[in-house]
Amino acid sequence: LVILLAASAGAAIYFSQKGPVILGQQAGEEVCDILPIFTGQFGSGNTGIGSYIAQDICHTVFANEKNDVAICNKIKTPEFKAECYSALAMKGGSADVCDRAPADARDRCFSQIAEKLGDAKSCEKIKIANDRDNCISNYASRMGDGSLCKKVTNINQRDSCYMNTARNNSALCNEVSNPNMRQDCLRNIGR
Image (cartoon, rainbow, N blue to C red; front, side, top):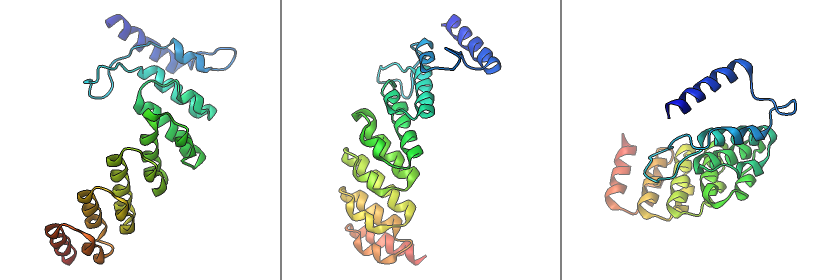
């Protein structure tokens, strides 16, 4: 492990001074495959799944540079894969790229696009109900658009959505179904 760490640090210093490895006069995606395979855990570490962080970052860079979603599929870490697809979607200014993402990256891609491009329709394409509700609620709160709250399926989250957007329209407090929350909403508006 110490030898791998020393070699990685040495390579980082060398490449920062000398530039990328050149294959055929131009840095190629093949360079990603020669990076260390297992570079440590990413995230909570409870999943038992090793991450290929160096390779994944490398593939992300080349996918973005070449605007090629096929390269995103080579990424093994779901967080990086979703980021790769959403970066290409951002570059193109459309969530269409997220439609082509594999299942392990699709919902996260749509969520990121909704946040970054301000596209509420992307939230509605998220398959997992709780994630979809979170996306819609967050978008509605950011934009102050309480009309979107009716699309939230979880009643408690819908009530919270109305409360968070009522600052722009006090009539939304009347949409809160929980009587205690409705009173809190009206009190907050009164301040």
